[in-house]
Amino acid sequence: MIWGPVTMPDGASAFPVYHRLGVQVLELQLVWGKVAPTRPSEPANPADPAYIWPAELEQATAEAARYGISLAVMVKGSPSWANGGQDLSWAPENPAEYGAFLQAASRRYPSVHYWMIWGEVTRHGNFNPMPPNSPVGPQRYAVLLEAAYEALKAVNPANMVIGGMTYTVGEVSPSAFLHWLRLPDGAPPRMDFYGHNPYSTRFPRLAQPYSPGVRDIDDIGTLDSELKSAYAGHGPTPKLWLSEFGISSDSANRAFDYYVSEPEQARWVTAAYKLVNSVPYVAGLGWYELLDEPYSVPERITEGLMTAEDKPKPAFYAYAKAP
Image 1 (cartoon, rainbow, N blue to C red):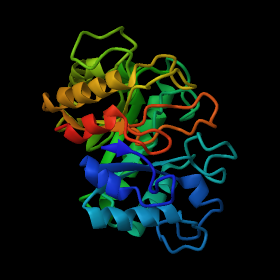
Image 2: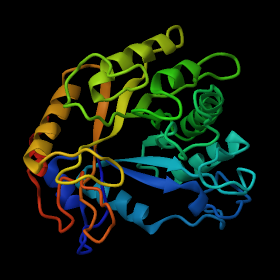
Image 3: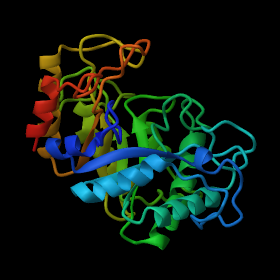
């Protein structure tokens, strides 16, 4: 899996590049609040005039079909009319409204079967409410996830629902999040895969947890054990969908203060995919991302497989060879 643009810097389609890399799943975002700035009268109907569907995603579905690449869409960001006048990070007051939007999206993009429910919900400012070290956020998210699962499966049972969507650390640790991820009846919410972004300062290899509050890529075995415990007696344990992982090259940036050389970045790519392919409990690993940010961006992020000018870095060739 990989995150990346639909078009390259010169305006050409990025899908020939993804095909060359052997990408199986391209991950993209859909922001509810931008698609539905006003309340629709028929929220489950993609043709409702309130909806403004992004042209980029239309292009992506067509190109993905042409190249045999699946899409995974992260749906986040509630509109102010659904969340009591708050910003996009706030959960809707009525989870069923989020479910109805997901139904509209699934009907609009019937070829998309992977749906990520929000993103990095435990990271500050990404999902609210999420008070530090409190069950309030996980419980609020659990109800939203359950509504999403029911809505998407009603449209097409083949839809795969990716929940959790936690981060290495956060306002609530991944371990505590799983412990508190419960519906009002005490059961965990339904999902097909558990999403997690295991960024790390440690080279990818299975190891003991770095600390109780951290779950990086070296800790995925521990995270799987915690999932087994959380879902014991509630059906099969969801496999891990490691939505994002990467390592910056050449310089620190606004997201991470650690980085490696370009050759070392390639070693991380190889090691990360070797690691996840050595265990049975990972459904996929998404590299973040295809391109470095342009030099004009302050404290630019350099986790890409290619430079900002779309020149392949050593990591590009390592990704193409990954199993």
